[in-house]
Amino acid sequence: MANGYKVLVIDDEESILRLLQHELSTEERTVDTAPSATIGLEKFAKGHYDVVVSDIRLPDGDGLDMLVKFKTAYPDIEVILITGHGNIDNAVEAMRIGAYDYVTKPFHLDRVEMVIERAYQRVCLQRENRSFRHSKQTLPASKLVGNSAPIKQIKYLIGRVAPTDVAVLITGESGVGKDVVAHTIQEHSERSERPFIVKNCATLQKELMRSELFGHTRGSFTGATENRDGLMTYADTGTLFLDEIGELPLEVQGGLLRVLEAKMYRRMGEKNERHVDIRFLFATSRNLAEEVEAGRFNEALYHRINVFNIPVPPLCQRKEDIPLLVEHFLGRMSIAMRRERLTITDKAVQCLTQYDWPGNIRELRNVLERSIILAEGGVITIQALPRELVEHVADQGEGTVFSLEELERQHIQRALQFYDGNRLQAARALGIGRKTLYRKIEKFGLG
Image 1 (tube, rainbow, N blue to C red):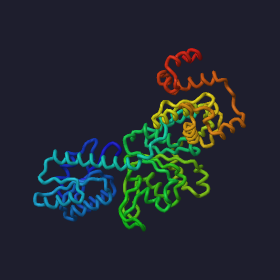
Image 2 (cartoon, rainbow, N blue to C red):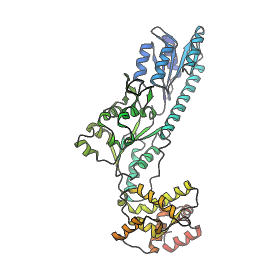
Image 3 (cartoon, rainbow, N blue to C red):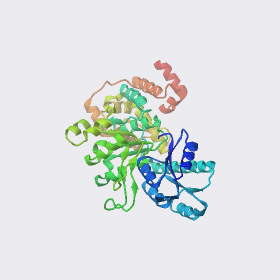
């Protein structure tokens, strides 16, 4: 449930179960019940609960033992125990070993609801903290920049698919910005405030890949000295972006297919399956259809992740976006370096536009970072660009060579388009005064 939470109540008194289910169920809170420890454990294993409320004494089980099982399986859930006045000591002991709180019989419904709500708030906080630790190093490097036809098409596709829960496969050469597309989808999705976990499958150690994705229990393999959750747990209720999915070994792909089809998975060494609610995004620079033909990629998984494909073209096919990308990166670098606005000459922009960029946007960003070091007074000239790049452009002799006046007109036009006609922002980005920009707009007939 992306917009609510689930509570499991375990008690052998039918009247208590009926009362709590009827009085505590709301649009945002689903309350399930179980009349015994056995049924409670079965429901817990099949369902996905955020808070468990259990009697400390049941005919077929002990509340303390169940508490340990619940917290071992799902460390992030919270357990509230119901006890009689004669068992207060047991309840206090339960809190020492991990229970959130306890209520005594006879109880007030307001007190029970308050404790459940606070327990769920703690669950949310713990999940946010854990997801932040796993995603804080994977913030987007950039935003989707450009006004070319391919970029407009990508923005259209994102606008249609982002609000859904459909799996998306983002394809394209290395360095084209597939991660930026994934982050843009996340930002415009209904899960934008939920955990967003990013993992590059190429960085996973092959022998630990299954454990990192699904988690493991203590003793499930050599070196497994404690229970550990995987990415599926961290991404629950949110989004999981698996970059370079073509690098995932065949032996792990079956488990991922199970999650996509049934929303179920099993930690290594664990018997019971767990339920998850995850929106999946995938990216690859490989041709997965060819990988399937070669027997290196699971055909069923390929069809399952390729429900909605967003192809990202190489930079050489949208060169008209290069001036805007340059302005965007220089703006970000100026902020990161705490410097005055970095600028670039028209001649240098023309050189960058004529280059083919085999490394795509990643290469462009790296070239700009290098050129800043050689820039004079915060201005990147053609002399600050890598010699091999300038020589390659000169050797190719490709493209129409425009006058400096025409380049200036195009540069100003793109800046105005990028900032949606906001002249103040465009002037700042161009490194000129507002009055100067007005004169140039009138000169080039851009008004």
